[in-house]
Each structure stands twice: as C-alpha cells, then as structure tokens.
Length: 143
Image (cartoon, rainbow, N blue to C red; front, side, top):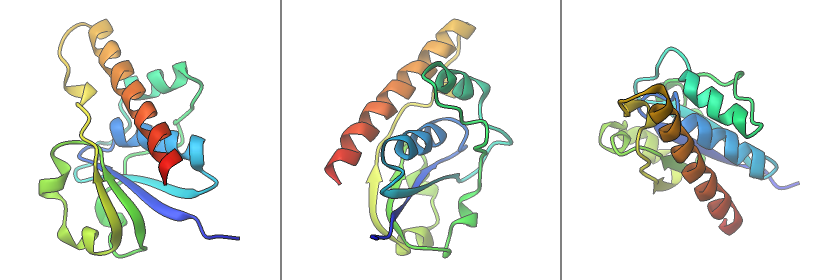
C-alpha cells in the first residue's frame, strides 16, 4: 500500500482558515493524505463561527484544536505545506521549508477580522469556507 503524503496547512492563528482546510482535505482525500494544520501564534481555541459554518455543511471539527507550528518542525517530511493566509509566509521559520516538498500559497482573507454585525461576520466565514472548499476540491483532484 502506498504511504500517504503529509500535508500541513499553515496560518497565523490556526483557528479558522487552516482548520477548515484541514477538515476539507481530510473529507475529500483522507485516504491519500495525512492532514495537519498549525499556526505561528495559535489562538486558544477554534473560532466559534468556524465551528458553526462547518456544522452547517455537516463537518464536525470539535475534536480539532489550534496547534503551534513548532510542534511540526523537524518531525516529518511534508509533501505539501499550504499557507492559507497572507502573513504566515514572512514570519514562518525557514527550517520548516527545509523539511517540506512543495510550498503552496493560498492567501484567503481572514474572516475573523471582519467587523460588523454577527450576520455580517457569519457571512464572511461562510464565504471563506466556500472558497476553501472549492480550492481543496480542485487541488486534490490534480495531485
């Protein structure tokens, strides 16, 4: 049996975008990839709206939690490290890139930074969720 390729999704807080990406790739291609996510400065918990919008489409991520990128450095080879925010690349320890195959930059807006009513914030989380979902579906079919 062929060994699964390791994929690490990386962002700053590891509380929204990278958690969504981890869940989607696991859903669509968990038989081909071992999937992780981490943050440069992880939050204490996954953003509640992240959990809510994933619940809306039938994906329960309550067992996932934010993790620091240092926990992943030097532990294994990552076939892909996928940066899902604009700020991680500049701040990411260069040693992480040395233990990886291919780095992909998929900058998604941060839904947690949206100001406004609860409904406006929820709309932002749904929009980013759907963008990540589409990107994961397309990408996993091509690798």
